[in-house]
Image (cartoon, rainbow, N blue to C red):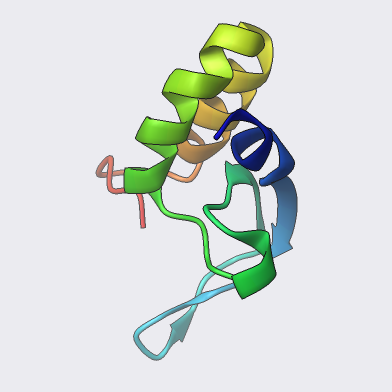
Length: 79
């Protein structure tokens, strides 16, 4: 479980779509449940992987969670 969590930490940068509206370019450091399947990052999954990651590297865990929080819009919504 540990090697899967750590091996799944990746940096992404780009734009994305919300409905038919293209959002601005943003960056995200996130854990992925399975890199071989090419899954998209999920804030729900991040909570579970962060429990493992925080034991090994609290600084990296803080960077990942801070990256998610930086995506919040003016109303606090994290897409």
